[in-house]
Length: 324
Image (cartoon, rainbow, N blue to C red; front, side, top):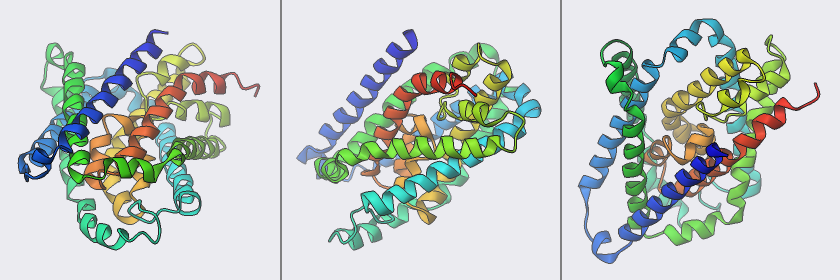
């Protein structure tokens, strides 16, 4: 119950900050100004957030100790689950949502102009800075920063998220297409988390065919959808080994997503970027998705993350209860 209430309160804060930012950004006095500092501040805040995430992981003895014991199983489950979520969402985007590479309806008069305008955002230079930030953060958290300081990483991450989500909302508002983006996405946006979830579980089951864990436990480990702080807790009474695999796999999903999003945006599609981080598409990884794609993809990423976050506390126990 406490976990559910905490999740709902966090979702309310995230939604409120994005909406507030969009409302402020859409004001004529704000839209008429270039506000170059907003983009620069957003980049700096993103780097600080990612460094802090790295510090938090590097200081976590459970993450480090799990690398050698269960790393291969977690890696295989993570890679296949992410591949499956991208594949299923690509099929959804192309044949059901009928959106092009940059997430616009096919045949839209805005397509050519918008593609040319936003294609430059999906460059791979962001990956370089992300890799540096993660590596430096993990090394610092492991070898330099004392535990008394790393204990406050959660607070820094929370405030960093609040700032980034507010600025993402401002970017959406400045584009002047906030309402039209919602209308374009429509109720079909709810199909995105369904595709992500289905792709994740199907390909995690495939991984289970080749792993000692088996199909059921591989699915249970992947059902955290990137929420590495909750899934292991839910799985601990069922199996400590599966809980450990779930923890490392979901940590890997968040890190790999941050690294891979610029490549997926360029070579696969903008909407597919929302598939990679799973539940984290609504918070820590949302600024990376928007930074590599376009502000309108916020609708898809945020909605997918919210739905998957609410599904995890139900999905993990349901898989554990399967009679095989």
